[in-house]
Every structure is written in C-alpha cells, then in structure tokens.
Image 1 (tube, helix red, strand yellow):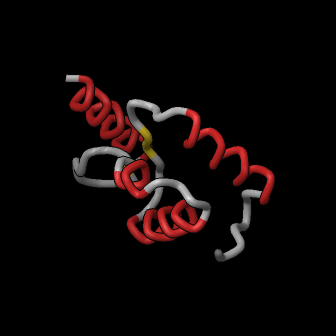
Image 2: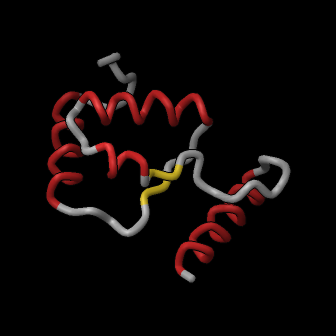
Length: 85
C-alpha cells in the first residue's frame, strides 16, 4: 500500500474497523477521479470489502458545470437529495 500523506496507520486501522462494523447509507469524498482510484486501492489493500468500496461516491456531487466552491456545495446537496429520494 502506498503511504498516504495525511492518514496514519492507526487512523487507517480505525477506518477499517469502522467499515467492518457498520455500513453508512452514503459515503462521499471530495476529490478528483485520480484521487478516487488511489483511495479505493488503499481501502482494498486494507481489506475493506469490494461491495463497500464500490458504494463510495468520489468525486462527490453531480456534474453541474464549473468547480467553484459554491457550485461544488450545491452539487453535493443535489446528489444527497437525489439519493434520499
């Protein structure tokens, strides 16, 4: 597994335990498509179930156009509303 710049091994252990204990109704991560690939590979290497990994929305948000902070926030809200329905 490639070393992550911001998450310690102890934090990865907590993440693994959290995923194994429960499955949240929605998991979204702000980031690019390339970040999504890295994140999903790292979670797989930790032993997180593939079905859980496939449910992660990264990048989170609906494609609405530009990537200004306001539009990103609205696109995330829109996706959460879409999933809720």
